[in-house]
Length: 297
Image (cartoon, rainbow, N blue to C red; front, top):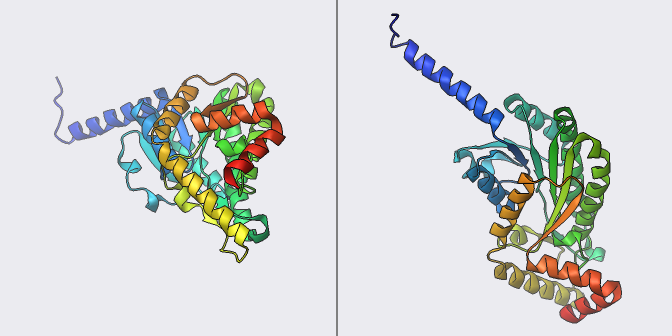
């Protein structure tokens, strides 16, 4: 019988750990999440990891992560969704570690609340680059991966802004409607490759999103400033009220991930989103617009 030396034991232990880790990565499902450093993205990452998924949490800067990298099952990567070069480099790093990617959740997004007259080119370009083109570029990068695997799933988060049009949402709502249209069109292309596409809409949740929304500069036009104050107050009230919405969102997202729809599907989560969606369809444009005007003006 050959005895193990003291040097061989740690080497064998390291080898076994490496093999176990590689098997674990191969067996467990894997999700890529954009905009995962905070808010809904962070909550999604934590929930999926808790339920046994390999979580690839991407964010604009790894310096922003204070928690996720310390969680078992979560690996953080730097990713700028507005940069094709950043997306390609990030994908290369991911595929070097993970053999299969089961799901991509496009969550990264920013807000811009402005009157059209006061809108700045830089802010318009920024919200389009992140909220719409960012989704397009990330999907474009991972379609070949899913096609090669003969399976995959995209969940693109659009919010209630992708369903209805509300005051001061000219730019944010436009980008979310664009993602809705893009996702539905893309789903036809991917049907033959067993790639599922879905969008998810919900209302305001308690997070830093509203605090980080960029607004147009103060104006000397009284009606503009009055409307901005009213919209700010309404959104703040709704956000504080929806205390349980974040948990509901992550739980339903997980259910969608576990049961990918075979055909394109829109999921509406929470009372606010479902209520507005129903009355918009039921009342039609003119009556719905009258209701909004009465609520705000």
